[in-house]
Length: 425
Image (tube, rainbow, N blue to C red):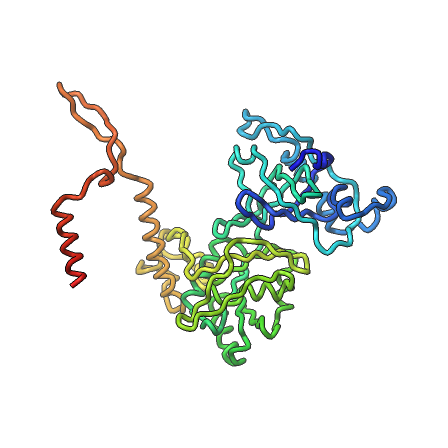
């Protein structure tokens, strides 16, 4: 990339759509800078059009730039005495003059790298991050990420930032709806603290009565359900309306039609679609990485790799808060003990006849097992041993890791050989 090709005036705001190795695909905001205007071919007089056609999006972007300046992000990173970062060698980001909203269906895309100083301070760049891009090379479609704006939310699995809601997609048939699997996904989605939308695909494969029964059942769990059919284009417009002006993470097991749904919402996506296995009644993985797709109504939708059983990685005490039906009981009354795990403790108001209570007990055992494992890792075996020297003197010496450097005894080797012979017979 040649330095002469870079523009040296101004900086740009954008959103990271995808991360590939050490490169980041960034979608720039429309009407945000003079460079963007020149890129899209706006060669008319700046003064005459500077105050015309200014929409909500342009004012919102200028307000965002101002907020960034006030927060000190683009004025330069603070000195080390304040436990912050060294000063930036680049000029501060200044608000651009008022610009009209340009008649382009898609904002420009740049393939960017991350500045070395961001790597040195350990600043990662995630999908969904709002970033400041400087020195754009319009001819080569390249740029450099200089700053990462503060995140409103952050998810580890999948790794994505600034998400507003989770769209959980399941199928009512082919593969069949499994209540335990659905409950596990719902608990995982609730643990993020984001809004949860429950969508059931392939609604055309079941009768209206079955849809009503499923809807009433899930309403008892605390969730409104939207039945759709990607193949027959049923309720796709309703779903698109609920995604408007938000960043949404699409989650669910494999084979329920997530990639097909994205293709229905965004005809230009052209995602690969897999088939459901006839033997296992499960889908095959088609999504390999996290990527944001722009919907026609201005929303962003993130497709995530499908998985069958999400981890229960919360603490045992927090688990009960991720069941809406249990939260309703705790809102009315409280248990006798503050550390109640709602199993067999006396005076528990949660324990009782509700459908997912058995799911809760099983998830609780998994959460307790995970907590025990973490506690054991937090107190590992000592790496030193106390050895007594001559004249009663003691000294600490490094201890070898257990069984790492030990050879198997001859007796153990013979026993393993005998077991192999028995298996062959």
